[in-house]
Length: 265
Image (tube, rainbow, N blue to C red):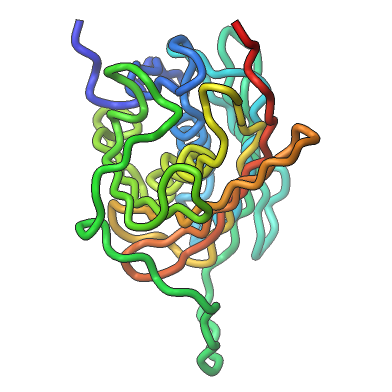
């Protein structure tokens, strides 16, 4: 059977069926965390859509691998302030929570101030100047790695930083145009798959969470990850990605990593 042309297919109110387009690198039965993170972002965005708020921080806690199959999303408002709102969305399968997003949404308001000197650092070359990037951690003919278009413009395997542009080839939800935030979340969980500094045949470096901070609304289809991965011999690690679009820097993504040696067969 043909795979539906989206990461998720609606299955009623707040229910979805995940497709093979979201398959991750560590198991054929489970998803890369990017599409589920974007699905949670979609729920939080919808909770503030009627007001002049922008979601500028999302933290995704990954409790368990998210399967390719039936899922449900629930959303609640934790605090509805005048200028800041705090929201929560939970992704579950069969009633079992798998991931939870907490979001911070801030009211948009005009503030006039003098120009501020930008953070030092060269902007990445545009995506069309790069070459197709193959994620070192992925295998197989269908999955997240084939559902996104990638262009490497700096670095490579074993190098910090490595800089890759990513855009989704398929929509997040069938029949919908992904929002700019959803496009960012589809890409942002890939920092540890972009800056791969350990041999994935010998080690795993799976992230237990993802936090994305945005200081302006993203624009366009392409999202750039200027990624650094820092593993430690204690089994801990962090991946940090500076996020860009064609207009310039737009935020940061952070992942905490669990680093383990693979069993020797």
